[in-house]
Length: 226
Image (tube, rainbow, N blue to C red; front, top):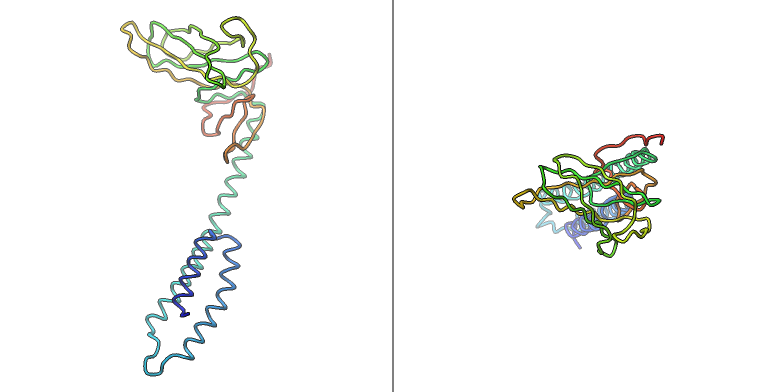
């Protein structure tokens, strides 16, 4: 086994390990082996065909590159860890706040929910569809048709007047003008932040049972005293 093979093996190990403490320990242990192999190779080289100094330098540079890569990975790991702490601190700061975020979820809590949407232009008719977790439409409402932002209170009942269980419902807006041309509508999720959870590896603000990403929040404020 020559020094080139040892260097290549270490490079592969560093890539597979992904850096970090384990990679640094492996490199430290392998460095002693590297020096031993190098010394042995120099002692047993053919006097008539000595080791090429350029090749020797190339091997040292390759090993040094692996060491530098592991140190870089360690620094990146520390930066990511710090970013995670910052996001967690920011998320906790939203607890108890009333937030608004672009999304298609309406949180129903205690039989109360807020429907918020923005029309890009004037419409002649607006139909609001609310569906449950199974995709079944549970409530159909008519909404204001003027351009701009609209917020409606939903009493949490279905089309037959029955009370629906608390949870997250999906909202869909169907809006059209007098020529039956579709009018673009943007929907929002609005409610008080009741908790912070990690879902699918991402930190989420919980508005009742509705998860909202930190990057999706468009505004927040203290809830009214009432």
